[in-house]
Length: 412
Image 1 (cartoon, one colour):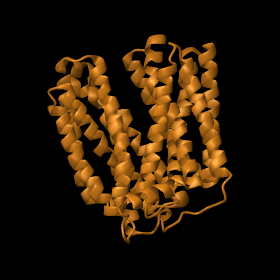
Image 2 (tube, one colour):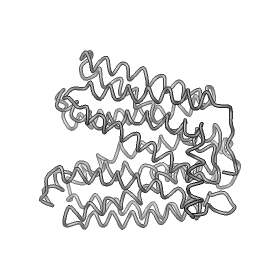
Image 3 (cartoon, rainbow, N blue to C red):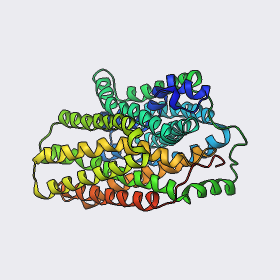
Image 4 (spheres, helix red, strand yellow):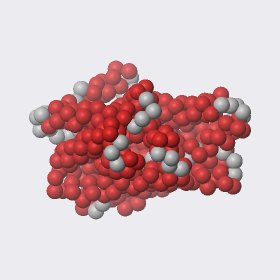
């Protein structure tokens, strides 16, 4: 990202040169918190003497906390500033991670994971808000593409880090590493990331003011069009994450190592999509890229249904369309985040919260539907993906493309 494409402020230049890796990995805190400890599930169950299902519940509890936290941190940052809320979030995340490491009973781990999710959500929400404070228009979409590109390193490396640690230490060491991460990132935020919230009176935290701020975002046709477009499309990825461990390993006999390799392949595809998005934004524009991406997602979903219904292509009949699908999501998210936040300047934190809750909530819908419709084959997953991406396709065309042209409102 060249400084010439940013809003010309010293803060934007500083973040552009030094801050993207810090903010990108910060925005991937959920992936770090989830993927790093997944290989430790059997060890946790054995050590705490509980069933595997009890340990699996810690994942759902973390995700619940993460969803709740996203609705909180944005308005707080609009009132007190981005940097203080990020720093307090990191302090509390470190304490919650230590609580996970010190848990002697599964109930203690449940509480620690809930708190870890709630405070860890600050990084995801506010990394986006910081970028919105400094960029606008096409430059904002390009900046979000770089943020998404860096963020993909977390889900690619986290399971490997967790597996290597288990070779030398017990499962608690993973959470001590996450606590250490919070300390390192606290220092980096202090040294590298400036305060970026626009000057002026902050958002009042009175209930009426908060409801008004949320209402401005929820009532904005185009902003909600971008957010819902991304949310429904990401529901397809949650369906993929929910179903493919069983489909790949049980139906096709893929080993756990092979599954990890296929997972990493999709993450690499997402990174490549973000790179291509940054390159072609200038030629097609943000909305033009979203049209291409949603169309490509729909075609990939049709191929998936055909393969799921007929068995055509076997394993690779699913892997390749999923690679295309997941590869498009990073670029789609970058453009949709930019489209949503571009309309809100002074309340970018609140808008980022709404985007995150919708993305997460609609994404979870994909996983829930896939589990509900499971019949032991790949077809339910493919049908859920096609249904959700079809909604995404038409939401964008109905709420964004048919709206009157609009520009961001600097007063919001």
